Image (cartoon, rainbow, N blue to C red):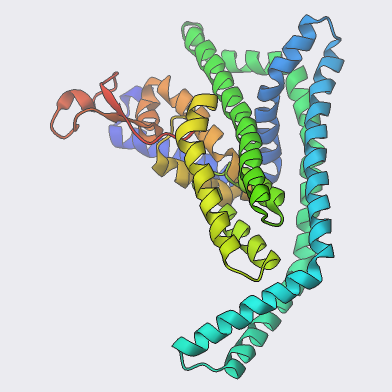
Length: 374
C-alpha cells in the first residue's frame, strides 16, 4: 500500500518514524538502555555459551558462568578505581599544596598581562568557589538518585542477559515472523552479520582497553609520572567514546598530573605520550589487531555520540556506534530504506552524483574509502 503513496508522503512517514523512535527512547531510557546494554553483552557472551553447551554443560549453568565472568571483570574495575581513589585521598594535603602553587603561578601571570591585582582575583575565585559549593549542595540529592539508578541498572543487567540468552530462540522466531517467507534468507544474513559486527566491535574494545592501558600507563610509569596507571585506565576507557572521549581523557590526564606535581614538564610529557599512543592505536594497532568492522562515517558517528549522550548519558555515548551500525545493517538490506544506509555509511561514491546519473540509483556503485572508526 505504501508503494502507491507520493514520494513526499513516504519520506514524511520515515522521518516521523525516526522521531517516534527517538521520543520513545527518551521517555523510556531507564528501561530501554539496560535492555540494549544487556543485548550487546549477551551477543558478546554467545561464543562462551555455545562452547559450554557443546561440552554438555546444563543450559542454566552455561548461561550463568559467562555472566559471572562479566561480574568478576566489573568487580576488578571497581576495585581498581576504589584503590586509586584511596591513594588520591591519602595524597590530598600534597595535592592541595600543588593546586595552590599552580593557582598562585596563574595569578601572577594574569597580573602581568591584565589590570586585575591579586585581591581582585582572590575575590573572584572566592565568589566562584561559593557558587560551586552551593551548586554542589543542591545537586547532592540528585547525585544520590543517580547512584541509586546506577545500582538498579547494574542489578538489572545480569537478569536481562540471562533471560535474553535463555529465550533467544523465541526472540529469533519473533523476528522471522515479522517478514515474508521469501525474505527469510535476507533476515538470516542480517542477523548473522549483526552478531558478527557486535562481537567484533565489543571484543575489539576490550583488546583496545588492554593494550592502551599497558602502553600508556607503562610508559608514564617508566618516565616517573604519578598516578600513571590511573591515567592510562581512564584514558583507555574514555577513548571508547568515538572522537569525544579522547578529548575528555586528555583533559583528565592533565588535571591529574597538575595535582601531583608543581612543575609543568610532566603535563607536556603526559600530552606527548598520549599523542604517541593514540597515533599507534589509530594507525597501526587498531587496524591490524582488531580491524575496522563498523564502517560509519565520522559525521554520523559524532552525531550519534551526542544524540546518545543527550538521550541516556554516558551509557548512550558508549552504545551509540554499535546501535548505528546495527541500523545500517538493517537499512542496507531493506529496499525502501537503502538511502538511510548510504547516509550512515563510509562508502563515498567514486564520482559525483550531480554529474553521473548512475550514482543516484539504489544499486551497488564504485566507492572510495572514507574515514573509518574501528
